[in-house]
Length: 223
Image (cartoon, rainbow, N blue to C red; front, side, top):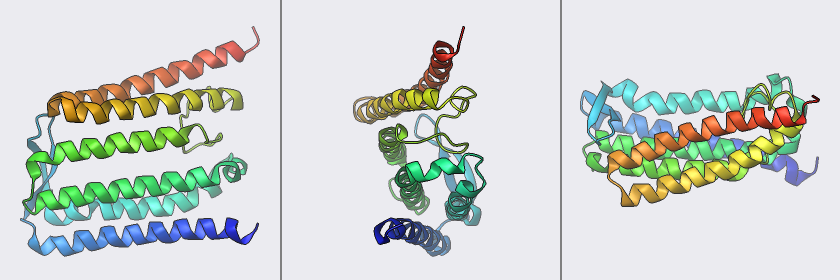
């Protein structure tokens, strides 16, 4: 392994640790200024419909990020197909950073809403972040190699490298399209409808990829 290869994982780990520290800082700094109960969920109409006490509400994402950071380091070591991880190491690092940035951005929005700023538009911004997350994940999906923790894991993708590759290639394209559809809908449709596009698009993507993986497996299986 050359110096550049070994520096990449260290750089990713440092960035992840930095994002976790930022997340904890946001939550801890906001606690004294937040009301006793804060909004943690909004309905399709953009109205608050879920509340938590401020401490667990503001520290939920920091705890989640900390757990994810640990899991990101452990999973490649316990995966039965860990031998495949070097083939998509850069993609695995990309997914880690993308998810961590997404969660910190969501935390920034929910914390700002908890402190009383623009809570009525938070649905727009969260949906926008989700659309960008889907586009980002879709662009990398086709580069993943068989493993038990990341990607489209069906009985058929896990049983055949060819099924895995073809399913993830199609799944990546479709997830980008879903993300773009959500992005456009977020600007041209009412919040309720853009949320329906997001949930419906994700459900359709999941159903299509599962059935596609089965169809490919059937095509490749000896009759």
